[in-house]
Image (cartoon, rainbow, N blue to C red; front, side, top):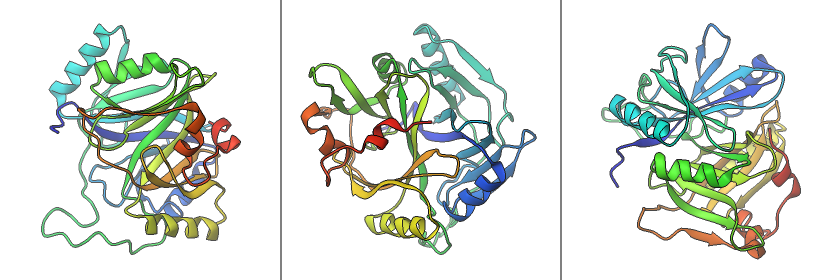
Length: 308
């Protein structure tokens, strides 16, 4: 599939309660590469395999949660075209100037019907991966910490799920991959959407309050690396919500856990490829437990209710 519009998730700005503690934790436990701070005091990180300057931005605040989630688009012309489509759809956009985020070009910011702030951008300075682009060695984990491959997706909780799904699919060109139905068999409880051939680049769940974060997710290379992450979490006394286990939805293997501020994160591996000609997978209400946690086949109440 030719990627000509929205390419991939690019960055997430996460609110933390203690910036110094969080910088140390995201460096030592998550194994992210610290990239510096800006004049607002925000701290920037990337994963070992990402080539762009940053994907995780931490901002100190009095409550945890997600400020915004950004996607990289093909080029400046694509950014202009997608902004036009958003405006034609009735979405108000705001231009954020180049340099407002470190090493990042101009961004188009807007609010989706669930209340979340989403950004599109075309330029972020490339600093390279750990192995480079000329005669690279294999990318072997040789440092402490979980050291994920990339920041992969987010799961958002909000009110107008149908409106958000329409915006992502009809305006931004995402494809519906999987969905969970409520008891009536008609209403969507949650949707998993992709802008690529991955099982999902964003997921959204219907919720009574707008603008809530369920988790930001990081990809690992294998089930063995997920188990390694679990060992690190136990050794470092990280609060684990669920896992290691497997999803029915997306087929990924997973651990859900919390950063020191209470933001839920995920490490996962696996999943499958999806293409636009494939029929979306539907999970019915009576099997939603297996959809979320395939091994236990039941839901964890804290997993459903704890959001930031």
